[in-house]
Image (cartoon, rainbow, N blue to C red; front, top):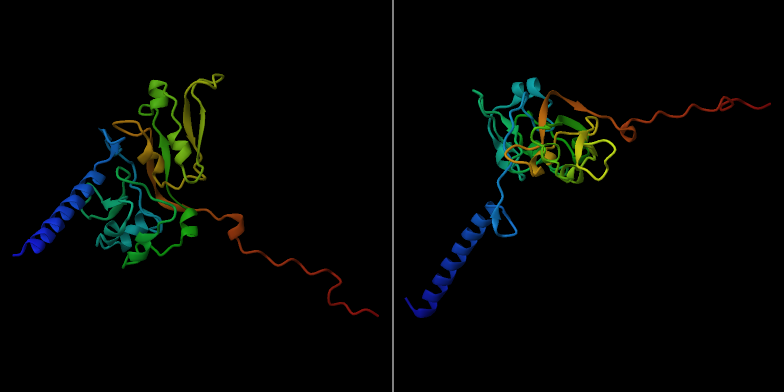
Length: 233
């Protein structure tokens, strides 16, 4: 093997190792390149959070074949195999990411119709669950720390911060969730800095809910003037 070919192969190997190392480093999230950041814990949920377009427990159970294609296709690493069930249907978890408003990938790949095909606009009107405040975990309520992460990052404007101590605006504030706006996307749960468990946790709806904004309603034709169609003398 000549020297130039040897050098080329060595360079390729070094590049491959660098890519693998970079991927591993990317997988391990760090704060400022120094301290490792732990992922939020997985809260116990009364009802699993199912993907938008699935309709809820009964509809999803009837159609899902457990192929896990949606889990593999999820770019935000939100969907996973269910835990503690005999049948491994997919469900949502927010330790690694959250369900972004612009993503409908799972609805595009489901071969059984268990997750119906939806558009981005449709998704914004679907309520898969709601965020529930957990005062025992929230660092504002527990430690008196000023924190605005959940309200700042909620993509639907469903979280308002109120004074923990009324009459003291300079003090810590805690989140109040507007259930009419909350879709159960999990942004607040995933991004909450509280450890080991987040201060907000999403509870799934047994039956998904859909809102119908005014602009989406079919407009009715305005009544014709009373004189229209009359023949003038």
